[in-house]
Length: 319
Picture 1 (cartoon, rainbow, N blue to C red):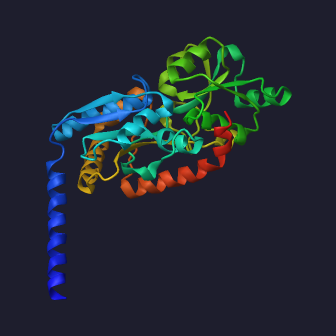
Picture 2 (picture 1 turned 90 degrees about the horizontal axis):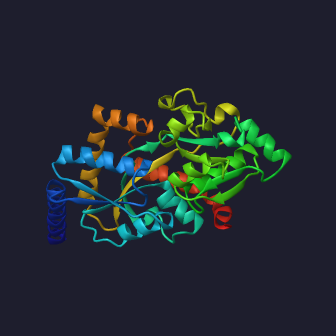
Picture 3 (picture 1 turned 90 degrees about the vertical axis):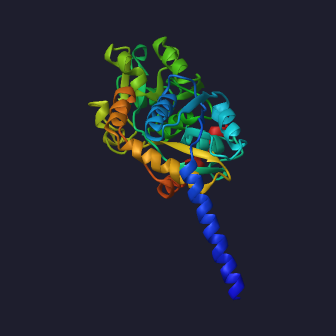
């Protein structure tokens, strides 16, 4: 018994030492950050902003690899199947790792990755209407669809996060819209400007200029409380609409990545979120406040979101 105890203690000491060495040694070379989105959007912006400050903190660079398409499943599959050596990382959000599972686009989810942390939360999303639609408020949307169900078109990417936005908004407001597959954020903007769709969910930073020019009308923000960086835009809750969708970003690694590497990345990300320059970059880029959740809180939040979205599984898959 004594020999077994000594052996166990020795093995535990060796494991701790190995973990400490892995944490201290990482990163030794460029980290490949894969995102399931095109350049220029809010996910790409958040990943590139993180990468810039990551290099300041660690002295090591990150390269951003854009893999759009398939509702981000091309990107998530690439990370899932990568070598778990700490040098391939996913920067995504709940649309990429939860909504795709709920919608059936992917047969895997958050449990198939090593979740590191939530580095940020998208509180810059809004629902907007094209000025050509003559919709000026949520009340207009509800009243028009009551009078003529399906007469308001909601542009989305089928099976993706914005598709779920449309479904939850409909459920909370009672609006009976026609949900159409428009494509990416850039394609949604073009469709709104051209009057080909009436309403869409999109990052405020991407449409601010069109809003200020009178080409789009902001209907509300789906945050639990107002994001003050969006200015005088009411939440849907303030308008008696049951519609809250705050979208956490996710840092994840392939299953089997050394826990010490995950801890080190979490530590670096927390340092980044404490830098005033980082907060300023988020505000200027997408009117996004700083948010951060460490591993345990992140996993808890993501599981809560997954549970809340699962009731929409059938509707998301009926496309």
